Image 1 (tube, rainbow, N blue to C red):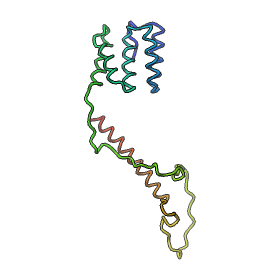
Image 2: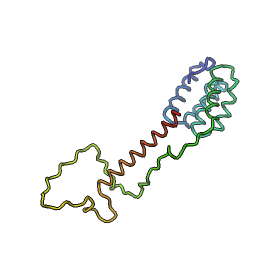
Image 3: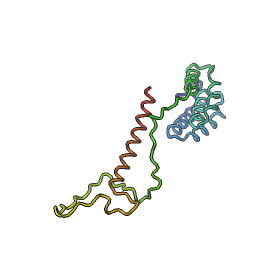
Image 4: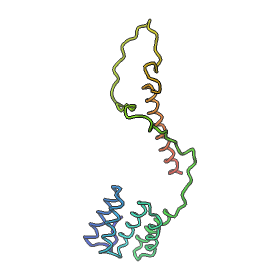
Length: 178
């Protein structure tokens, strides 16, 4: 968000740049603190007041953000009042209900210990020696103790988690596009 013509002092420009940098890095509280500090020097700055509202909303204080934006609806500078109007429109829009089909339930894997996870993806598996044709084939779970899962089960869990994440992303994209 650029500074408005009335907001052209060097200290204000530096403050706005710092606020924007904090905000882009997800440091909303620091952005808000910087806004409050700059507002002490420039209390009539429309840009600072917009950043105050945006920072408040990003921190989850939507009613407070709406109150700040409403004070800017009749601001003398057209671009500030238009941005305030746009933000008010977005923040007051009804929240859409998400159908259950869009939501993916991620299984609880907290019961697995750290040693249960194999994070060696990307490494090659050494070739298995040729088996004697006369020796009977053992089931995959033959070497596991009761209550343990075989490595193939861990691969299935990884695949299942990947599919759940993919389904969640597709659901979000569908919601955004509709």
